[in-house]
Image (tube, helix red, strand yellow):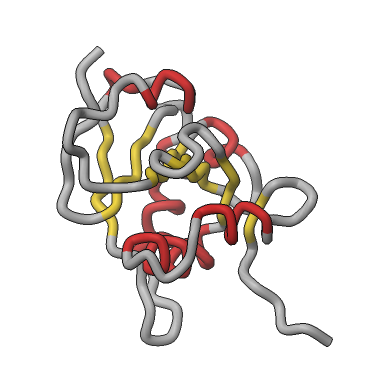
Length: 139
């Protein structure tokens, strides 16, 4: 299998090709700005990556890759009503994961890309089901 391609912006890699309509909805949601914020991502759709796991992905990251994380649109993202996208740590704890709903993806992408926050801060803030839905204000 070929290495994951280098990209300018954060990478969203499709690893499931079972539902084109859901994929389109996810891509539209990712690109949708939230107020003045948006996720800066490059979407890669290549059937060669169909079915790869987060563990397999780690072996396909090329030497000198610029990103510390990657987003994965997998079967769960396509089939779950909230379309939670898998986020994989490639830097601090390679292979650690959590999921993020598309409307909160901008915060993850922006803050991890700029190193304003650590992967663990988002992973630890995920709900009990492992999905990050944004930070809530304390009551």
